[in-house]
Image 1: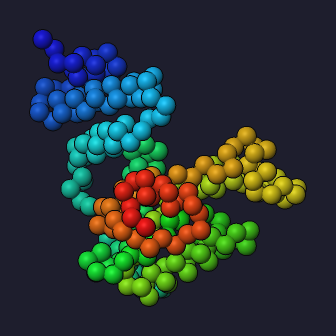
Image 2: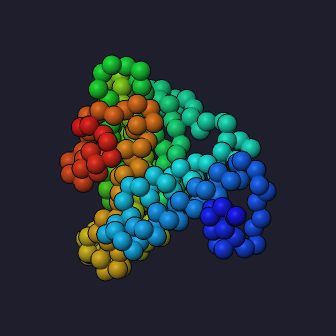
Length: 231
């Protein structure tokens, strides 16, 4: 009587053989339930929902735990010109992107001050005058240091999540007179493809479940609330 998880793995991955160890059986079981959850939400639900997201995340975490260096936490000190932070790296199992959390004062009683910042290579690193992303990031880092408790959630969503290459294409169109929104639409891309669900998971990992959010973007606020963050 072959377990359903093992049967599923042989159907999906016929060229891969896993030894019948407790660890491999756990992996197979997680894969089996991820597949069932995906099929259910794909055909019987209007969206994938958080259950599929959480199952996928747990599956990736389990896979990561088999790596030789999995016991070394990706969290370290980061001295900056604004003061000392800690920086923690995350892998989003849904987008497969690596994000960063810059934080201080996780053990303090004051309410954390938080900025959700989407990656902008040209503004953050090169000082571009096409946007104010770089100055916004630096101002937030300075204000968080003054507050004594807070975090920068740095999400790898370049160009409103269209990617660097497409962003340069949009810049080329902007050089011809298009604005940011119309340039994205001209390329067949969304006006804003950013999402913030995983930001909530990152904040909860350091105990930040109630925060003061630095934003005028209602979508950031709502997605954080939907993912268990009190604002």
